Length: 367
Image 1 (cartoon, rainbow, N blue to C red):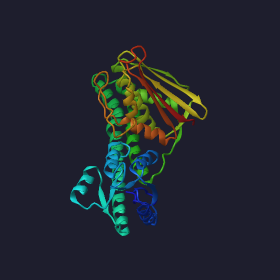
Image 2 (cartoon, one colour):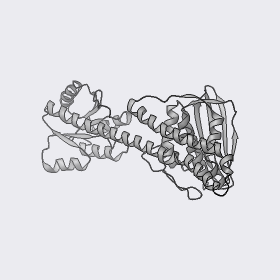
Image 3 (cartoon, one colour):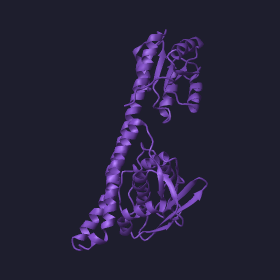
């Protein structure tokens, strides 16, 4: 785990007494913190709209809006609820302290200030905040690796298992589908190697090795792996992609975690006997790969959450298919690592009976 650094942590001091701000500000600047100040609760709420501090030192006794109310509003807002608040107070009675904790404060410092105490308490709570953030990041990384192993690895193994099952009654399938099974098993081994690489990349904060990759070839590979899913719902993929078009990607993740996820979702939410359109066009130094289905679509609220790993976005497909809901955040991570971007648009069937479905645009660098 990376060593925690407190340098340039942003601290907001909220106090209506200039002398208090001066004392606190000087002591904390000497510790190399970046300091912002507000002289009232209202000013503090305006300040956090422009930037999010790592910690807030908040005076309780202020005119118009006291520290309790300011803290209550901060903790009510999802954008600021995670910011640790330390109350500055001359109120030493137990009721006031308990009230402060009930409103969401994590600690208090009594006046007059002892600068060494202030420094120690600030450092302790910054350490707790940054450690929690690092643990959350580590947890996210573990979820990503688990998703790749449990979800993306299932596709090539599933293909191989299906053909071997068919081969029990028709041994000739082994000769006619041998190349497909070999490709699927190679994909499975590549996914395992990708997981190993991702662990190294996360620890070293390195970058993926990108290479020129034939776009049409990877689409064909993905469609071959997912062929059974398309067949089960009798969905036709309509592909219009030039054979010579190349993009800069990390091939294993692009096929198994990007294309397979987009196409799996497209099939999952499409109706039987429908089509999925796959198109690619050059645009300057980029290729825009568009995948469009005509399924049930997504609501605006779901569109806003679909790339947020902390939100639950899993839904049943049109045939009751299930999933983890984790594929889209992971897909965005990979596409961003390639230097590309994703644009997502959708229209729900219940709102637009004649024109519904989801369109995913992957913007990728030309190879």
